[in-house]
Length: 298
Image (cartoon, rainbow, N blue to C red; front, side, top):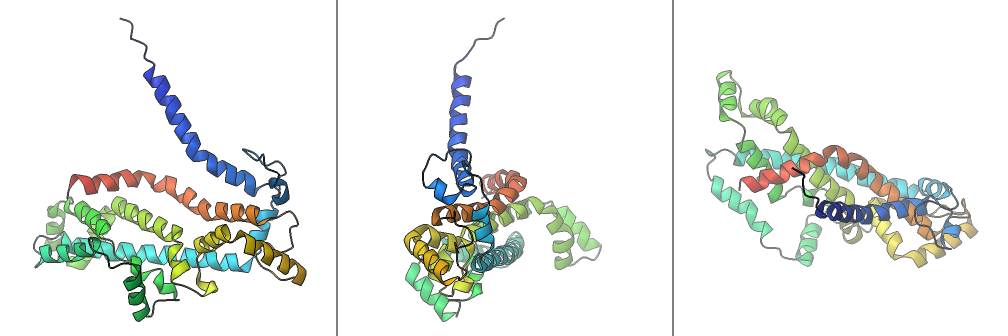
């Protein structure tokens, strides 16, 4: 019996191919623009490949001390913030996963309440100011230590671990801390990787905190620096001209005659996104598992 030919698979694959191309093409354009001579790029017609290949844009970016400092702040806040966030959420989720915990329902409702009500930006800013976090490195880390949904995802995963494992460990003389370190953590690799990816990407992409909570230019992350470059093209161009006359070293100094503010922004954008693009494919499979954990059990 001959199978019926259907037009739907052809249309489906064609549509998905167009959607994938629409998502990938902006990265291709940015990469081609960043590898092309800046002044030549101003003529337009850069679509897929650089017309005048050069690495001057990247040389200018890497030669700037301010960008290196911003990159250092971003890496430090991402590593430290991710580690502390995962540690705190895992400890809290482990405690809430125990049905024998006194006041378990109260503590769950207590940490859930702030997710419903928010006082707004100004009260939050005043709170950070009273805690002396404004214009410090810790303003990037401490406000993101807590996330109710992450705690629920980890708690749901831990509730799926057989209780017999802990009971057998207690017979062997293990306490709660040794059970947590020796048994719970090794079995929680997938969910911890999921949460680490969630919060790590949030730290890496955050430009808001550096723009509104930090005025010290030596403490801003690379995303905030990129945001400044995207919104202050005219002032950046004038600063480049002044630095070229004075022989100073700022973004776009006179080392590369073909570099322009736009080409430098493209190069910095590629450098900013590249680490996430390298890490994400290895941890992508944990996303689906983490979302399913939170949806199957409440």
